Length: 101
Image (cartoon, rainbow, N blue to C red; front, side, top):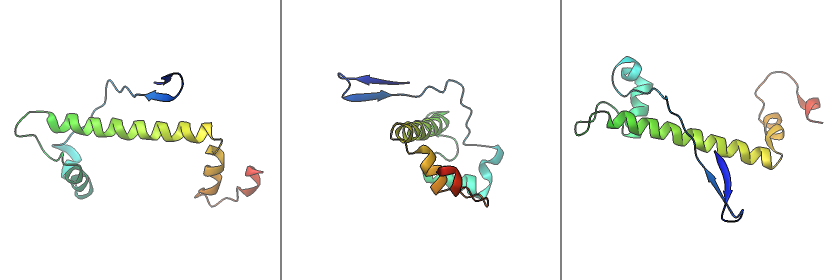
């Protein structure tokens, strides 16, 4: 959700992800890259103090990343830069230079 607040001087933005499934134990969490990422985030394995705390923290991190992506997308749209950025950083092997004109 995005809404202007403080007489339009500020923006309140939030994201709601009511059913996000994440895990910090079992499954693919033992694979090298997944394990390294969980370790980097400080959420690898089960929390010894509070069961489920690491999974809740990982879900919070994911939601924060989603929120940042949404804000970036809306900023690009508002500034009219979204298509220009896609054309500039296009990794396709096709020539898309004519599409931007």
